[in-house]
Length: 302
Image 1 (cartoon, one colour):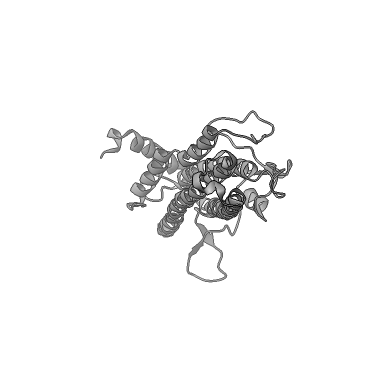
Image 2 (image 1 turned 120 degrees about the vertical axis):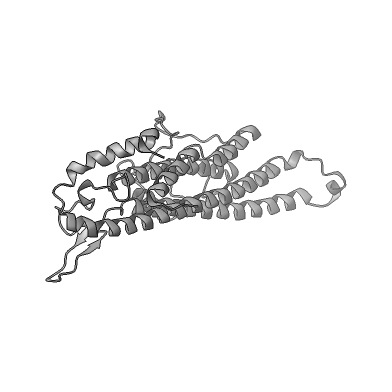
């Protein structure tokens, strides 16, 4: 399809033409050697992002399954005293035994939910490196005639973007970086929302547990969580707690979060539905980003 007939391609062509002036000071012979190295590096980094995207949705699905089981066990325990047990009513301590069984189930489901959440944090952490490793720099060599390239800058004069040159067809390095930043930001914001749901579910289902009866937004859900969230730039060291969650494109007006200790069944269902919806991840836009990058690279990301 001609660029003139495709608005998105036309805008990409404009970006490409604007970068021509920027590449005038970049030696053509060096550019010819830089481009294949830059292409290889970009393919590697976007392949990693594609894999991490798939891992996120898999871990999110597992976490929701654990959260659903946790809520079901909690509700069964919550309404156990009011249940009509029929012929089982005459069995000694049947309710206490059932309550103990449900509590053990909740503890198992809790550990599974926290493990899945920790995995999701790790996925977002792993997204940071490829998002910040898209540039290709000239590698410093001592007396060697060979020209080599690396992902880290050897001097401040090397921007790693080929002077703004297009890497494949239309897009310069900076465009790939902006797309990666847009992508990772969606997952960062969704991670914070998921964390809010985890904190709320723990506060509700384990009200009498010594570890969770006074659980606050600032508390770590696992050892080292604060460091992981700091890596993702979603932790305020000044406030010593994670940034507040928000919906995509909106600001949170709340200065603090207060748990509803006795939510209705409907509210708990809303929590689970919100988890499933991935409300901060625009799935269509994610697919569009990978399709755009794939089209540039003449490859596909599954």
